[in-house]
Every structure is written in C-alpha cells, then in structure tokens.
Image 1 (cartoon, one colour):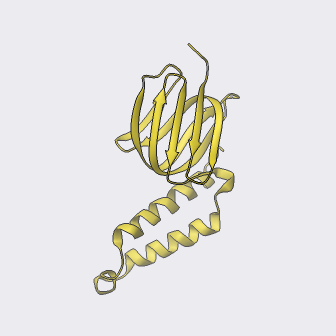
Image 2 (cartoon, rainbow, N blue to C red):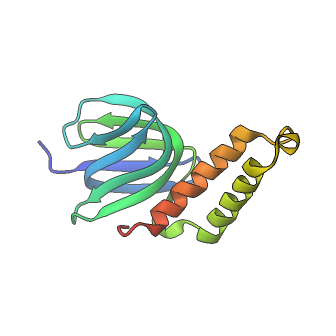
Length: 140
C-alpha cells in the first residue's frame, strides 16, 4: 500500500490544491469522513466547512470548502467544490463583514424579515463562520 494519496481540490475558477498527502478529513453531507491511502472507492456530496489534510511533512492544513463533491479512490481524492480557499487566501475583513450583514438580516423583526431570504442569510453566515474559524485556528 502506498504511503500517500493524491489530493486535488478544484473549483470552476482554479485548482486550489494538488499534492500528495497522508490523510484527508472532509465535511461530508452525512458527517465528517476521513480517507487514508488504500481507501475504498466512493463518491459523496460535501457541506460547507473545513477540509483538513496532513501533508507529506506531517503538518495539518485546512482549506475552506463551500460544498461540492468528493471522489475517493485508493490512491487519489478529488474534490470539486463550488468555491474553496486556502487559509492564507481568506479575506478576514470580508468574512467579518459578511458575518455582520447576515447577523443583521437574521436579527431583524418578522415584518422586515419577510423581504429577506433567510436561507441565503444563514448560508452566508455559515460560510463566514467557517472561514473565520479556519483563519483563527492554530494550524495552517
């Protein structure tokens, strides 16, 4: 069995990650799942959250994932994400502003809320929260 698996994370705009890694832990739609070299083949949908992986040097890395799909093969994991950002590429101020806007929208009284897409506001809040958690975490 190989020591590493190839991790590829791509969005419609760019390739975010393409490297050999030791493990991958991703936010699946039915819960978090982990992949090691030699894993059984499967395909799943992803939730908004942090995809974590351990690189060849043993360092845990975190990537923001905004939904999508993951395919696991014994020697490769491919993530097709709606959007994705490495920790270093997250715009903290933009995420904070998005969080504040979502909190304001969700905090309005019912008379004002009828004009606001609550589901959209909750999704924006979730994206902002996950981005901020990744940036504020100790590991990269």
